[in-house]
Length: 495
Image (cartoon, rainbow, N blue to C red; front, side, top):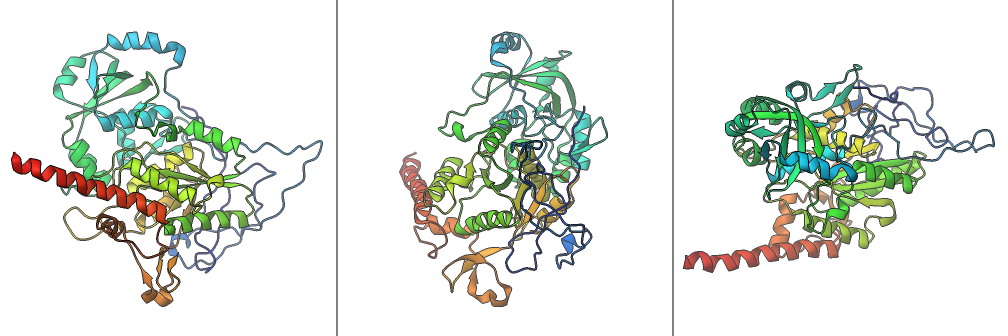
């Protein structure tokens, strides 16, 4: 498999010890077109208090005006290729429209493998190229590299990140039915033929090893494990995917599900010279907005002229107590309508991946997928992709390990990682602000659990925590849940 790589660029950085800065980039970067990229001074080792960066030389940043275009050297058009997709080109596994009828006819005659709703989400993810250069469900060699190294080594020796195994499980009966057939058809829960899996390989599904290496624990109560892995079959089937038609959910949100290729075209259309991605699975409060707005401000100060925000909520499987996708999207729209985030410099889209809640292992996947979507900056905060321990009253992962792992992860060298300072509610200023340890007593930390409790109880959070119209969306959602619970109680008593 050939790969086209960009040489690692020197990092752009701001010191985390500076009171005016909300983030520092890691020592990884990506080159912009010569006429638009910020210019860097000769390497100068900066002494940063954050031990995360202590072992790496940081380059001093000096913004300079871009050179004027001349007749012999016209200004290059800003393209969406701010960062190369992994493998050098985006994978697109959706069968071209003119070939679909023939491919469907072929699929109808192949052995069939039924897949669940979350498996279908993975077909969507892989088919659109989020996992490029992966071309299907992993075969054993790919699976072992992902499970043990969090990466793939390509044929040319280069390494791409692949921290989560993307696999499809089958049972004994399906394995027997497939027999020696090299190809199988994947069938969605509703009976639709969705894809052909070519040149299949079937190998043992060691669930305990997969769980232990992905989550770092085999404790019961891990949402993805309970929903997907425990009930799954004892075999994994890998092969190359051919998706028979674009995956649609018909939930009124499909227009937000932009593929990596569509996002890159949108960045091109808007003339972006930097794209910073923010992943979330919760409603946007003013602390989130502070981080995103401050990131854009810092990028402008660095010399970028048109940085765009990719507001990218996760749209696949989430645990039962998370706010549903449709509610989150409505809340995000209110944040944009109210101007808390600038709609002119923000692209709101859905990331279709299922959620694992696997902490530092999973956050690498989240970052890698945004590389393929064309984002060259990735914002990471406290305990990304984490959760509470399912049995003990503590976080499952160290809350700082996600951003540290991203700064070192193999295959993510070309992505600029933006760790940010903690935001909390300033009780004196009556707004969300960056936490100041010198007056810690003035700050209130409102967790996602606390936020949901406010909304569930019909209480208002402190003024300035979230825009009122966005908060109303959450309150109405929890009121609807309570109404459903009330309606169900008499039915249960009657039964």
